Image (tube, rainbow, N blue to C red; front, side):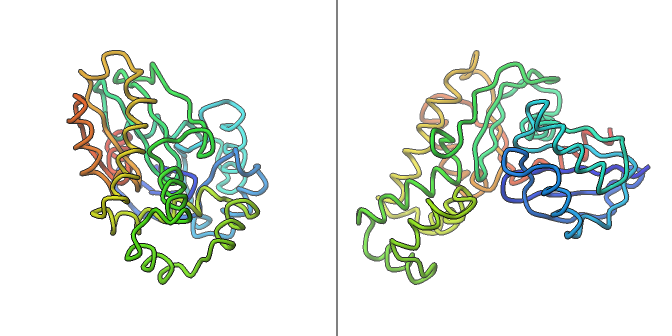
Length: 277
């Protein structure tokens, strides 16, 4: 029995094939989000990727934009077309993160990648969830939100020259190019989130650290503080932003009286255990 597990965000998808309980192969493709692409577009992308070579008997797909029936159906149809199996379960990326990080324990789980989302997990199912509003209206703590706040300070010349010079030398963007990418081209959220690694490299500068702290403080207030018994419940994190800024997250949680749980770049190792034990 070959089981294909997929953990998908807006930027990338991690695919792992389990053959009789052992990892046989792992590949990465573009992110899959039914809010940004229809079934035909997703199928076309998969057929042109390394994922097309995978031959699973059963698929468990956890992805952003898959928290509702419409999104699940869009992705399920694409997976059935590409992989030729009807044994497909599509669930939200939050449920995947909860299963991978919490296993069977009550916890708050947050995904901090290009976007941001969180939930309260009772050990079996999601019982409370705050809405993910996207990087324009919300997504506090996400890569896109963090990148947006940093770029705003950069263009307003509120970032030290040392950091500004390093930014322009590395990325070769002027103001007009940045404005064009954000307002006129596809996937502005991915564009803004791509600056997180740079922000992490320069986080010891006071103005950069202020951006980080403001975003994560907003995350705590808008998301975690709203959950039942939040300060008695461990908070687990996954995603690239959580990976780059884990120390800052834990520090702010402790400062505000919350319990920091695990921080992992990906929930895949936990999902493998969940689906094989």
